[in-house]
Length: 65
Image (cartoon, rainbow, N blue to C red):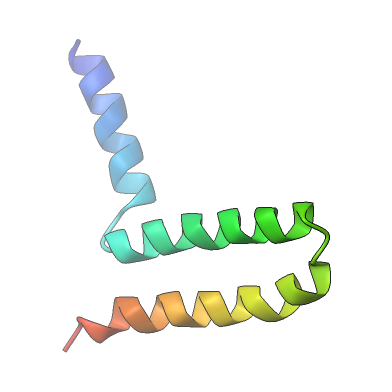
């Protein structure tokens, strides 16, 4: 059982690391990109995805002062 717990802790630390905001934001950006691409709005995706990445970065940096 300790190997399963250790495996889970490794993946949590690997994905979340120091910032849960970046982990959730990165997943949200990927999901939004997939939905836009699947819906045929690739032009909108090219504009929206960089803005979402910058917004996620700004949210993660907001709390570090």
